[in-house]
Length: 122
Image 1 (cartoon, one colour):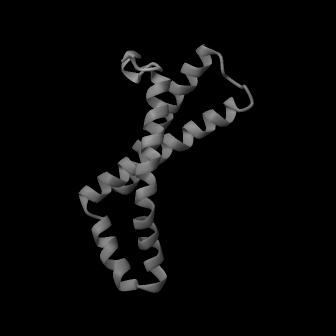
Image 2 (tube, rainbow, N blue to C red):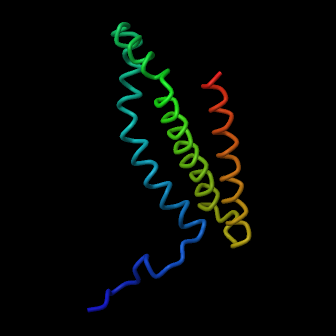
Image 3 (cartoon, rainbow, N blue to C red):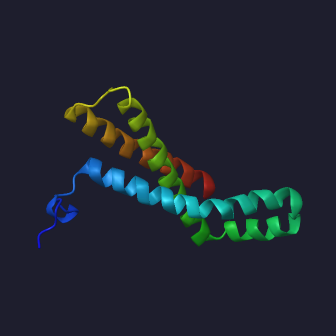
């Protein structure tokens, strides 16, 4: 029996669809990381010894690379949120502007992530 509605496999992926899906998947990964971030920040006042151990772990290269990826996910979701905010006022909804804003978001995210990477690897 054929599916009632079209399935995603029949569509050729386009940039806005990829951004929408990756933003939703990214925010789920971001949400799972927040308790670890809260434990690190909370231990600063309540358990200084734990904070020192966690800070040593955070300064390891693999963890810093995870932070760079985490920052990219956060920026991706944040900048897409600005796009959806503009769309809620029907600003920039014609196809030409949709792709222009999407490419600008991609470029801005890459630039912001490169600056963040440069800052944490100093």
